Length: 250
Length: 265
Image (cartoon, each protein chain N blue to C red):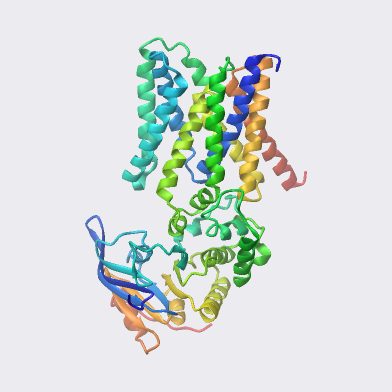
């Protein structure tokens, strides 16, 4: 068994004849906050779906916690927030409590739901994301930032070791984005959770992560942000030579 | 009206349908698959027509046809992953095509009662069969409630939490098929999907949680059936249509009540 939390080795993936990932390798270690960025259509989401086992690679090997993803059964050790939660229907009749508890109750029926222990876990995780006051609210009535916290709470309910998030900040205002990143800092500091996050926003994510994987034309470019990096160089490798880096403070 | 044996039996069956159709429909509506009820009911018609033609029990042949069709829909849905609704259109066309041919072959005079529903005498054996099937359907929904909830609001996360989503989806399709075949007798093929959808539409306006949404759907479903059956008996109206219009009236009352409350008139 290797010591990586996630390892992607020589992975290729195609949609029909369109090869979107070509012999890609990357490694994520315990406690990492890894960002995956790239232009539209650079297969960021595809790479994340491959990592969690929702897609199968054409070639190569993906391991989570040292185990081949095809044999991986410890689902409670990973938390996943897909892009789909963004489209959460406003009329969907589910409370914050029900959504957060969903992952807990996969082995139970209607009647045995919400035992005392489950309630305690739900309260605990809602306190962690500072949403305990909204427990009985319908999820559809929450703001974008609040919804995102609820989905993080759901992903955290089983105390996962790794949290995967696919573009969690689309449609979330600037203030809520800051709160979101403070929450991630707290999770990393207090619970040592490894975080893997797909984003299209290179500006903010490159300030927060310690590892950055840039996808472009089916290839991945790794950057260890604990060392000095060439920001303009990354942008050029992703978006072409004509890109200009503008820095401004306000 | 309860002095008549056929009304008592119709009422028992009606209440069962009032519970089952919206329960199944609740999950279908929230997964944006409510058209599946329409598709399977058209297949049920061809099943019933074959039953009449071959002098076998029409509900039994309808159950057989709808279960097979529901499995076919799941199979086709995987084949046309990005055009999932195509699978419904294909099976619906097959159902209507087959039904029209079987009906034209003759000896299918009773087919009209399966189209619009009726209050004809239901045999004791039928009642027992329907009660058993209803208990199986409701029991399964109760047993799988949490898994169905998780799959309904986020199928991928449900899969990643270890739920066998494919198996449960297949199983649920069979439940839908059984519900359609049972409901056909009273509500009629053309109106089954209405009873699966309208009480749910009303419940979504008042539900405060997922569990309460299901309970409201059942209440609205049962009330619609009881009111519909009673009116249909006293006013000599088509049973299925009266039930569906009762459900629509409940929906309308809630919409009006809510808009009055909102505008403060």
